[in-house]
Length: 195
Image 1 (tube, rainbow, N blue to C red):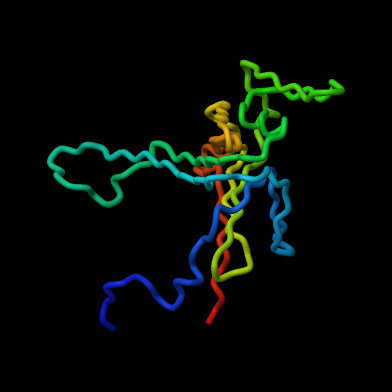
Image 2: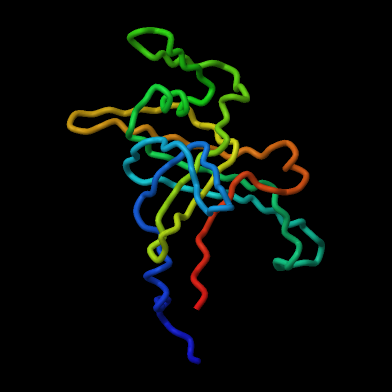
């Protein structure tokens, strides 16, 4: 078989992630029925962005003038999800700030107050992107575990438009996962049908 100069195949239309997807907090997967449940964070605008940043290092060895297979090590492996949230609630504002409290005791207002310390309760179990694969009814799910807003709160408003809050969530490993090398994110990708 000759090589192709184009990457498109008959399977291409079934292997694309479509649209902006939806963002959920504290999503859970039930492997007995193959379904997810969670709380929808709200409407977004301008899409969402998932990144995995990996910093590698190569030891310098006398006489070696090229890269050597097996001589690369991971210094850091970090997962982030940027959510462009358009739907405002007091809870979403608190999540965007990160270390903040929400007081709901007032009869007229929910009051969000920032603080200088991060509590264990500030971490979400997870924040998840749920997208749609063109060739499947099953979702593509990207889950960041122990998610916490990392860059604070920014809101820009203007005439004839709605405010959008960009929130950068960082994934955080559990202490017991550090020595095992397990990273704090998972990607659930639907299996392709067997031909």
